[in-house]
Image (cartoon, rainbow, N blue to C red; front, side, top):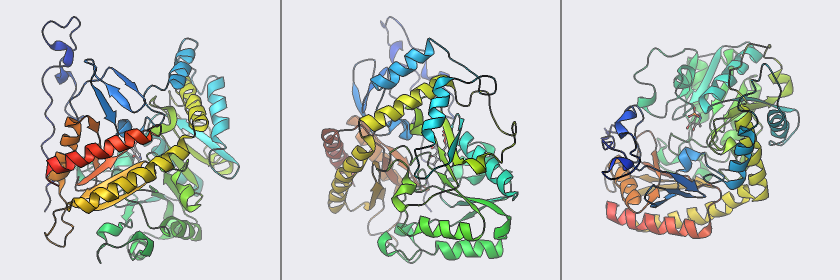
Length: 452
Ligand SMILES: Cc1ncc(COP(=O)(O)O)c(C=O)c1O
Protein backbone atom coordinates (compact mmCIF):
# COMPACT_ATOMS: atom_id res chain seq x y z
CA UNK A 1 0.00 0.00 0.00
CA UNK A 2 1.33 3.39 -0.93
CA UNK A 3 0.40 6.14 1.49
CA UNK A 4 -0.37 9.23 -0.55
CA UNK A 5 -1.74 11.18 2.38
CA UNK A 6 1.54 12.97 2.81
CA UNK A 7 2.07 15.62 5.43
CA UNK A 8 0.73 18.87 3.98
CA UNK A 9 3.29 21.66 3.68
CA UNK A 10 2.72 23.58 6.93
CA UNK A 11 1.84 27.22 6.47
CA UNK A 12 4.03 29.54 8.51
CA UNK A 13 1.88 31.74 10.68
CA UNK A 14 3.11 35.04 9.30
CA UNK A 15 3.22 36.67 5.88
CA UNK A 16 6.32 38.34 4.42
CA UNK A 17 5.42 41.86 5.42
CA UNK A 18 4.71 41.03 9.04
CA UNK A 19 8.44 41.09 9.77
CA UNK A 20 9.09 43.81 12.30
CA UNK A 21 10.03 47.10 10.73
CA UNK A 22 8.14 46.50 7.45
CA UNK A 23 6.08 49.57 6.62
CA UNK A 24 2.99 47.79 5.31
CA UNK A 25 2.51 44.49 7.09
CA UNK A 26 0.74 41.74 5.15
CA UNK A 27 -2.04 39.89 6.94
CA UNK A 28 -1.08 36.62 8.58
CA UNK A 29 -1.00 33.55 6.24
CA UNK A 30 -3.54 31.85 8.52
CA UNK A 31 -6.33 33.99 7.01
CA UNK A 32 -6.30 31.44 4.13
CA UNK A 33 -8.32 28.31 5.07
CA UNK A 34 -6.44 24.98 5.09
CA UNK A 35 -8.71 23.51 2.39
CA UNK A 36 -6.28 25.19 -0.03
CA UNK A 37 -3.61 22.48 0.15
CA UNK A 38 -0.28 24.23 -0.31
CA UNK A 39 2.46 23.63 -2.85
CA UNK A 40 4.80 26.37 -1.57
CA UNK A 41 4.81 29.02 1.12
CA UNK A 42 6.26 31.76 -1.01
CA UNK A 43 4.49 35.08 -1.38
CA UNK A 44 4.68 36.84 -4.70
CA UNK A 45 4.23 40.41 -5.74
CA UNK A 46 4.84 40.33 -9.48
CA UNK A 47 5.28 38.02 -12.40
CA UNK A 48 6.93 38.44 -15.78
CA UNK A 49 7.25 35.79 -18.48
CA UNK A 50 8.32 32.52 -16.87
CA UNK A 51 9.17 34.17 -13.56
CA UNK A 52 7.45 34.90 -10.25
CA UNK A 53 9.01 37.60 -8.09
CA UNK A 54 8.69 37.98 -4.31
CA UNK A 55 8.43 41.29 -2.42
CA UNK A 56 12.15 40.84 -1.57
CA UNK A 57 13.05 40.51 -5.25
CA UNK A 58 13.71 36.74 -5.25
CA UNK A 59 12.95 35.24 -8.67
CA UNK A 60 11.36 31.79 -9.10
CA UNK A 61 11.22 29.98 -12.42
CA UNK A 62 7.51 29.13 -12.53
CA UNK A 63 7.20 25.82 -14.33
CA UNK A 64 3.76 25.29 -12.82
CA UNK A 65 2.25 28.15 -14.85
CA UNK A 66 -0.30 28.48 -12.03
CA UNK A 67 -1.48 24.93 -12.89
CA UNK A 68 -1.26 25.33 -16.65
CA UNK A 69 -2.84 28.77 -16.95
CA UNK A 70 -0.20 31.38 -17.81
CA UNK A 71 0.58 30.07 -21.29
CA UNK A 72 1.49 33.59 -22.47
CA UNK A 73 3.71 34.05 -19.41
CA UNK A 74 2.94 36.09 -16.32
CA UNK A 75 1.38 39.49 -16.95
CA UNK A 76 2.12 39.58 -20.67
CA UNK A 77 2.23 43.33 -21.46
CA UNK A 78 -0.26 43.04 -24.34
CA UNK A 79 -2.74 41.05 -22.25
CA UNK A 80 -2.32 43.37 -19.26
CA UNK A 81 -2.83 46.43 -21.48
CA UNK A 82 -6.01 44.95 -22.99
CA UNK A 83 -7.36 44.24 -19.50
CA UNK A 84 -6.53 47.75 -18.27
CA UNK A 85 -8.07 49.40 -21.34
CA UNK A 86 -11.26 47.38 -20.97
CA UNK A 87 -11.51 47.81 -17.19
CA UNK A 88 -11.82 51.60 -17.41
CA UNK A 89 -14.65 51.24 -19.97
CA UNK A 90 -16.86 48.45 -18.64
CA UNK A 91 -16.36 45.74 -15.99
CA UNK A 92 -19.60 43.82 -16.38
CA UNK A 93 -21.92 43.66 -19.36
CA UNK A 94 -24.19 40.78 -18.46
CA UNK A 95 -24.62 38.24 -21.25
CA UNK A 96 -28.41 37.91 -20.93
CA UNK A 97 -28.90 41.66 -20.95
CA UNK A 98 -26.47 43.30 -23.42
CA UNK A 99 -23.94 42.53 -26.16
CA UNK A 100 -20.37 43.80 -25.98
CA UNK A 101 -17.67 43.97 -28.63
CA UNK A 102 -14.96 41.92 -26.82
CA UNK A 103 -17.46 39.10 -26.26
CA UNK A 104 -18.82 39.12 -29.81
CA UNK A 105 -15.29 39.22 -31.22
CA UNK A 106 -14.19 36.33 -29.02
CA UNK A 107 -17.21 34.16 -29.90
CA UNK A 108 -16.45 34.80 -33.57
CA UNK A 109 -12.74 33.94 -33.23
CA UNK A 110 -13.47 30.78 -31.25
CA UNK A 111 -15.53 29.48 -34.17
CA UNK A 112 -12.24 29.02 -36.02
CA UNK A 113 -9.80 27.62 -33.44
CA UNK A 114 -10.63 24.00 -34.33
CA UNK A 115 -10.36 22.57 -37.83
CA UNK A 116 -13.70 22.37 -39.63
CA UNK A 117 -16.57 24.81 -39.67
CA UNK A 118 -19.86 25.53 -37.91
CA UNK A 119 -18.31 25.59 -34.45
CA UNK A 120 -19.99 27.73 -31.85
CA UNK A 121 -18.76 28.71 -28.38
CA UNK A 122 -20.47 28.97 -25.00
CA UNK A 123 -18.53 30.87 -22.32
CA UNK A 124 -18.43 30.34 -18.56
CA UNK A 125 -15.99 31.00 -15.70
CA UNK A 126 -14.08 27.91 -14.58
CA UNK A 127 -13.08 24.55 -15.99
CA UNK A 128 -15.54 22.70 -13.79
CA UNK A 129 -18.35 25.01 -14.79
CA UNK A 130 -17.64 24.38 -18.48
CA UNK A 131 -17.63 20.60 -17.87
CA UNK A 132 -21.01 20.94 -16.13
CA UNK A 133 -22.23 22.78 -19.22
CA UNK A 134 -20.92 20.04 -21.51
CA UNK A 135 -22.74 17.36 -19.50
CA UNK A 136 -25.99 19.32 -19.61
CA UNK A 137 -25.64 19.90 -23.35
CA UNK A 138 -24.89 16.22 -24.02
CA UNK A 139 -27.89 15.08 -21.99
CA UNK A 140 -30.34 17.52 -23.54
CA UNK A 141 -29.05 16.96 -27.08
CA UNK A 142 -29.21 13.15 -26.93
CA UNK A 143 -32.09 12.68 -24.51
CA UNK A 144 -29.90 10.07 -22.80
CA UNK A 145 -28.90 10.13 -19.12
CA UNK A 146 -25.51 8.44 -18.71
CA UNK A 147 -21.99 9.88 -18.83
CA UNK A 148 -18.91 7.64 -18.96
CA UNK A 149 -15.54 8.92 -17.74
CA UNK A 150 -12.10 7.36 -17.47
CA UNK A 151 -10.33 6.02 -14.37
CA UNK A 152 -7.67 8.57 -13.40
CA UNK A 153 -9.56 11.45 -15.00
CA UNK A 154 -9.93 14.87 -13.43
CA UNK A 155 -12.76 17.19 -14.37
CA UNK A 156 -13.23 19.48 -11.35
CA UNK A 157 -14.63 19.66 -7.85
CA UNK A 158 -18.27 20.70 -8.19
CA UNK A 159 -20.79 17.94 -7.49
CA UNK A 160 -21.21 16.75 -11.10
CA UNK A 161 -17.51 17.06 -11.92
CA UNK A 162 -16.50 15.27 -8.69
CA UNK A 163 -18.69 12.39 -9.81
CA UNK A 164 -16.70 12.27 -13.04
CA UNK A 165 -13.30 12.66 -11.33
CA UNK A 166 -11.31 9.62 -10.21
CA UNK A 167 -7.74 10.95 -10.29
CA UNK A 168 -7.38 10.68 -6.50
CA UNK A 169 -9.55 9.77 -3.51
CA UNK A 170 -9.20 13.17 -1.84
CA UNK A 171 -11.08 14.90 -4.66
CA UNK A 172 -14.30 12.96 -4.05
CA UNK A 173 -13.93 10.50 -1.16
CA UNK A 174 -15.43 12.76 1.53
CA UNK A 175 -18.47 13.79 -0.47
CA UNK A 176 -20.67 10.79 -1.15
CA UNK A 177 -23.41 10.62 -2.29
CA UNK A 178 -22.39 12.00 -5.66
CA UNK A 179 -24.63 12.55 -8.69
CA UNK A 180 -25.49 9.26 -10.40
CA UNK A 181 -25.64 7.86 -13.92
CA UNK A 182 -21.85 8.27 -14.14
CA UNK A 183 -19.61 5.24 -14.85
CA UNK A 184 -15.87 4.87 -15.26
CA UNK A 185 -13.82 2.75 -17.56
CA UNK A 186 -10.09 2.07 -18.06
CA UNK A 187 -7.71 4.63 -19.61
CA UNK A 188 -4.70 3.15 -21.41
CA UNK A 189 -1.80 3.73 -19.00
CA UNK A 190 1.00 1.89 -20.78
CA UNK A 191 3.57 2.26 -17.99
CA UNK A 192 1.22 0.64 -15.46
CA UNK A 193 -0.52 -1.83 -17.76
CA UNK A 194 -1.53 -5.04 -15.92
CA UNK A 195 0.57 -7.18 -18.27
CA UNK A 196 3.66 -4.99 -17.74
CA UNK A 197 5.06 -1.68 -18.97
CA UNK A 198 5.23 -1.33 -22.71
CA UNK A 199 5.92 1.22 -25.40
CA UNK A 200 2.70 3.13 -26.23
CA UNK A 201 3.59 2.69 -29.91
CA UNK A 202 2.99 -1.06 -29.43
CA UNK A 203 0.16 -0.78 -26.93
CA UNK A 204 -1.40 -3.91 -25.43
CA UNK A 205 -3.66 -2.16 -22.90
CA UNK A 206 -7.14 -3.65 -22.68
CA UNK A 207 -9.08 -0.35 -22.51
CA UNK A 208 -11.34 -1.32 -25.42
CA UNK A 209 -12.24 -4.67 -23.83
CA UNK A 210 -12.94 -2.85 -20.55
CA UNK A 211 -15.25 -0.38 -22.31
CA UNK A 212 -17.01 -3.30 -23.95
CA UNK A 213 -17.41 -4.92 -20.53
CA UNK A 214 -18.82 -1.63 -19.21
CA UNK A 215 -21.45 -1.80 -21.94
CA UNK A 216 -22.23 -5.43 -21.13
CA UNK A 217 -22.13 -5.27 -17.34
CA UNK A 218 -23.12 -1.76 -16.31
CA UNK A 219 -24.98 0.27 -18.88
CA UNK A 220 -26.49 -0.07 -22.35
CA UNK A 221 -24.56 2.04 -24.86
CA UNK A 222 -27.85 3.44 -26.18
CA UNK A 223 -28.41 5.03 -22.74
CA UNK A 224 -25.04 6.83 -22.83
CA UNK A 225 -25.17 10.53 -23.71
CA UNK A 226 -21.41 11.11 -23.76
CA UNK A 227 -17.98 9.76 -23.02
CA UNK A 228 -15.71 12.41 -21.55
CA UNK A 229 -11.98 12.08 -22.04
CA UNK A 230 -8.81 14.04 -21.38
CA UNK A 231 -6.66 13.63 -24.52
CA UNK A 232 -3.73 13.40 -22.08
CA UNK A 233 -4.58 12.62 -18.45
CA UNK A 234 -3.68 15.69 -16.38
CA UNK A 235 -4.04 15.45 -12.60
CA UNK A 236 -4.14 11.67 -13.06
CA UNK A 237 -0.42 11.67 -13.93
CA UNK A 238 0.29 13.28 -17.32
CA UNK A 239 -0.42 10.05 -19.12
CA UNK A 240 -0.03 10.22 -22.89
CA UNK A 241 -2.29 7.57 -24.45
CA UNK A 242 -1.16 5.28 -27.27
CA UNK A 243 -1.64 6.72 -30.79
CA UNK A 244 -4.66 4.56 -31.65
CA UNK A 245 -6.69 5.36 -28.53
CA UNK A 246 -8.57 8.55 -29.40
CA UNK A 247 -9.28 7.63 -33.03
CA UNK A 248 -10.69 4.26 -31.94
CA UNK A 249 -12.71 5.85 -29.14
CA UNK A 250 -14.15 8.26 -31.72
CA UNK A 251 -15.19 5.30 -33.90
CA UNK A 252 -16.83 3.48 -31.00
CA UNK A 253 -18.74 6.56 -29.82
CA UNK A 254 -20.01 7.25 -33.36
CA UNK A 255 -21.10 3.63 -33.71
CA UNK A 256 -23.35 3.97 -30.65
CA UNK A 257 -24.56 7.55 -31.20
CA UNK A 258 -22.61 8.64 -28.10
CA UNK A 259 -21.18 12.16 -28.01
CA UNK A 260 -17.45 12.52 -27.41
CA UNK A 261 -16.50 15.30 -24.99
CA UNK A 262 -12.81 16.25 -25.07
CA UNK A 263 -11.78 17.88 -21.80
CA UNK A 264 -8.99 20.17 -23.03
CA UNK A 265 -8.99 22.33 -19.92
CA UNK A 266 -5.34 21.43 -19.25
CA UNK A 267 -4.20 20.25 -22.70
CA UNK A 268 -5.67 23.11 -24.72
CA UNK A 269 -4.45 26.47 -25.93
CA UNK A 270 -1.12 25.29 -27.28
CA UNK A 271 0.04 23.35 -24.24
CA UNK A 272 0.90 20.15 -26.12
CA UNK A 273 2.38 21.74 -29.25
CA UNK A 274 -0.94 21.87 -31.13
CA UNK A 275 -3.66 24.39 -30.38
CA UNK A 276 -5.82 21.56 -29.04
CA UNK A 277 -4.39 18.13 -28.21
CA UNK A 278 -7.07 16.26 -30.22
CA UNK A 279 -5.35 17.64 -33.33
CA UNK A 280 -2.38 15.30 -32.73
CA UNK A 281 -4.68 12.42 -33.64
CA UNK A 282 -6.96 14.28 -36.09
CA UNK A 283 -9.96 13.49 -33.89
CA UNK A 284 -13.01 15.73 -33.98
CA UNK A 285 -14.95 15.68 -30.70
CA UNK A 286 -18.61 16.66 -30.48
CA UNK A 287 -17.92 18.98 -27.57
CA UNK A 288 -14.56 20.43 -26.58
CA UNK A 289 -14.10 22.04 -23.17
CA UNK A 290 -11.49 24.75 -22.61
CA UNK A 291 -10.36 26.95 -19.70
CA UNK A 292 -6.98 27.64 -18.01
CA UNK A 293 -4.87 29.18 -20.84
CA UNK A 294 -7.86 30.87 -22.50
CA UNK A 295 -7.50 34.28 -20.82
CA UNK A 296 -3.94 34.19 -19.41
CA UNK A 297 -5.21 34.01 -15.82
CA UNK A 298 -8.51 35.85 -15.78
CA UNK A 299 -11.45 33.58 -14.97
CA UNK A 300 -12.93 32.34 -18.25
CA UNK A 301 -13.83 28.96 -19.67
CA UNK A 302 -16.06 27.60 -22.34
CA UNK A 303 -17.06 24.87 -24.67
CA UNK A 304 -17.10 24.46 -28.42
CA UNK A 305 -19.74 22.45 -30.22
CA UNK A 306 -21.22 22.45 -33.69
CA UNK A 307 -23.92 25.08 -34.10
CA UNK A 308 -26.61 22.42 -34.68
CA UNK A 309 -25.74 20.78 -31.37
CA UNK A 310 -25.46 23.94 -29.29
CA UNK A 311 -28.85 25.10 -30.58
CA UNK A 312 -30.44 22.11 -28.82
CA UNK A 313 -30.07 24.05 -25.55
CA UNK A 314 -33.38 25.90 -25.12
CA UNK A 315 -32.89 29.58 -24.17
CA UNK A 316 -32.55 29.94 -20.41
CA UNK A 317 -31.80 26.25 -19.77
CA UNK A 318 -28.20 27.14 -19.01
CA UNK A 319 -26.25 30.30 -18.21
CA UNK A 320 -24.69 32.24 -15.36
CA UNK A 321 -24.24 35.80 -14.15
CA UNK A 322 -20.59 36.19 -15.14
CA UNK A 323 -20.27 33.90 -18.18
CA UNK A 324 -18.33 35.70 -20.93
CA UNK A 325 -17.29 38.58 -18.66
CA UNK A 326 -16.21 41.55 -20.75
CA UNK A 327 -12.78 42.01 -19.12
CA UNK A 328 -12.03 38.28 -19.37
CA UNK A 329 -13.09 38.38 -23.04
CA UNK A 330 -10.70 41.30 -23.68
CA UNK A 331 -7.94 39.26 -22.02
CA UNK A 332 -8.88 36.21 -24.12
CA UNK A 333 -8.74 38.19 -27.39
CA UNK A 334 -5.30 39.56 -26.46
CA UNK A 335 -4.21 36.03 -25.46
CA UNK A 336 -5.15 34.73 -28.92
CA UNK A 337 -3.23 37.64 -30.53
CA UNK A 338 -0.11 36.84 -28.49
CA UNK A 339 -0.34 33.10 -29.20
CA UNK A 340 -0.57 33.81 -32.94
CA UNK A 341 1.95 36.65 -33.20
CA UNK A 342 4.61 35.03 -31.01
CA UNK A 343 4.00 31.56 -32.50
CA UNK A 344 3.60 30.07 -29.06
CA UNK A 345 2.12 26.78 -30.24
CA UNK A 346 5.23 26.17 -32.35
CA UNK A 347 7.44 27.23 -29.44
CA UNK A 348 5.66 24.73 -27.17
CA UNK A 349 6.43 21.95 -29.63
CA UNK A 350 10.11 22.88 -30.03
CA UNK A 351 10.81 23.62 -26.35
CA UNK A 352 8.88 20.47 -25.45
CA UNK A 353 11.21 18.31 -27.57
CA UNK A 354 14.24 19.99 -25.99
CA UNK A 355 12.86 19.37 -22.50
CA UNK A 356 11.82 15.77 -23.15
CA UNK A 357 15.28 14.93 -24.53
CA UNK A 358 16.84 16.43 -21.37
CA UNK A 359 14.48 14.48 -19.09
CA UNK A 360 15.25 11.24 -20.96
CA UNK A 361 18.93 11.90 -20.41
CA UNK A 362 18.32 12.39 -16.68
CA UNK A 363 16.42 9.09 -16.58
CA UNK A 364 19.54 7.23 -17.73
CA UNK A 365 21.33 8.49 -14.63
CA UNK A 366 18.66 8.26 -11.90
CA UNK A 367 17.25 4.75 -11.35
CA UNK A 368 14.20 6.04 -9.43
CA UNK A 369 12.81 7.60 -12.62
CA UNK A 370 10.52 4.82 -13.82
CA UNK A 371 8.99 6.66 -16.74
CA UNK A 372 9.49 9.89 -18.69
CA UNK A 373 6.61 11.16 -20.82
CA UNK A 374 4.97 14.20 -22.25
CA UNK A 375 3.83 16.07 -25.29
CA UNK A 376 4.80 19.67 -25.96
CA UNK A 377 5.19 21.50 -22.67
CA UNK A 378 3.16 19.00 -20.64
CA UNK A 379 5.94 16.85 -19.19
CA UNK A 380 6.35 14.32 -16.41
CA UNK A 381 8.72 12.07 -14.49
CA UNK A 382 7.19 9.08 -12.69
CA UNK A 383 9.10 7.92 -9.59
CA UNK A 384 9.42 4.35 -8.38
CA UNK A 385 11.45 2.40 -5.82
CA UNK A 386 14.00 0.53 -7.90
CA UNK A 387 14.37 -3.14 -7.10
CA UNK A 388 11.09 -3.37 -5.15
CA UNK A 389 8.01 -5.37 -6.11
CA UNK A 390 7.51 -5.58 -9.85
CA UNK A 391 9.89 -2.62 -10.35
CA UNK A 392 7.03 -0.09 -10.54
CA UNK A 393 6.27 0.55 -6.84
CA UNK A 394 5.30 4.26 -6.67
CA UNK A 395 7.50 6.59 -4.62
CA UNK A 396 5.47 9.64 -3.52
CA UNK A 397 8.01 10.57 -0.82
CA UNK A 398 10.82 10.92 -3.35
CA UNK A 399 8.51 13.01 -5.54
CA UNK A 400 7.82 15.28 -2.59
CA UNK A 401 11.53 15.59 -1.81
CA UNK A 402 12.28 16.44 -5.44
CA UNK A 403 9.69 19.23 -5.47
CA UNK A 404 11.16 20.63 -2.24
CA UNK A 405 14.75 20.48 -3.55
CA UNK A 406 13.68 22.16 -6.80
CA UNK A 407 11.92 24.89 -4.83
CA UNK A 408 15.09 25.41 -2.74
CA UNK A 409 16.80 26.11 -6.08
CA UNK A 410 13.95 28.43 -7.11
CA UNK A 411 12.20 26.18 -9.59
CA UNK A 412 8.47 25.58 -9.09
CA UNK A 413 7.07 22.28 -10.39
CA UNK A 414 4.05 20.23 -9.26
CA UNK A 415 3.11 16.65 -8.49
CA UNK A 416 0.34 14.57 -10.07
CA UNK A 417 -0.90 10.99 -10.26
CA UNK A 418 -3.15 8.79 -8.19
CA UNK A 419 -0.20 7.88 -5.95
CA UNK A 420 1.29 11.41 -6.05
CA UNK A 421 4.49 9.90 -7.47
CA UNK A 422 4.63 11.94 -10.67
CA UNK A 423 6.49 15.25 -10.98
CA UNK A 424 4.81 17.33 -13.64
CA UNK A 425 6.41 20.23 -15.40
CA UNK A 426 4.18 22.87 -17.01
CA UNK A 427 6.29 25.75 -18.37
CA UNK A 428 4.61 28.77 -19.92
CA UNK A 429 4.61 28.57 -23.70
CA UNK A 430 6.80 31.68 -23.89
CA UNK A 431 9.69 29.91 -22.20
CA UNK A 432 13.12 30.15 -23.82
CA UNK A 433 15.76 27.53 -24.65
CA UNK A 434 18.01 29.00 -21.94
CA UNK A 435 15.26 28.70 -19.31
CA UNK A 436 14.64 25.06 -20.26
CA UNK A 437 18.37 24.36 -19.89
CA UNK A 438 18.36 26.10 -16.52
CA UNK A 439 15.38 24.01 -15.36
CA UNK A 440 17.07 20.79 -16.51
CA UNK A 441 20.23 21.62 -14.61
CA UNK A 442 18.22 22.49 -11.47
CA UNK A 443 16.33 19.20 -11.83
CA UNK A 444 19.62 17.33 -12.14
CA UNK A 445 20.93 18.86 -8.89
CA UNK A 446 17.57 18.38 -7.18
CA UNK A 447 17.33 14.71 -8.18
CA UNK A 448 20.81 14.14 -6.73
CA UNK A 449 19.92 16.01 -3.53
CA UNK A 450 16.62 14.12 -3.19
CA UNK A 451 18.44 10.77 -3.43
CA UNK A 452 16.87 9.70 -6.72
C1 LIG B 1 -8.60 18.41 -17.33
C2 LIG B 1 -9.26 19.35 -16.34
N1 LIG B 1 -10.58 19.49 -16.38
C3 LIG B 1 -11.23 20.31 -15.53
C4 LIG B 1 -10.53 21.03 -14.58
C5 LIG B 1 -11.26 21.93 -13.63
O1 LIG B 1 -10.96 23.27 -13.89
P1 LIG B 1 -11.20 24.38 -12.77
O2 LIG B 1 -10.18 24.13 -11.71
O3 LIG B 1 -10.99 25.68 -13.49
O4 LIG B 1 -12.59 24.22 -12.28
C6 LIG B 1 -9.14 20.91 -14.51
C7 LIG B 1 -8.37 21.64 -13.50
O5 LIG B 1 -7.22 21.37 -13.21
C8 LIG B 1 -8.49 20.04 -15.41
O6 LIG B 1 -7.16 19.88 -15.39
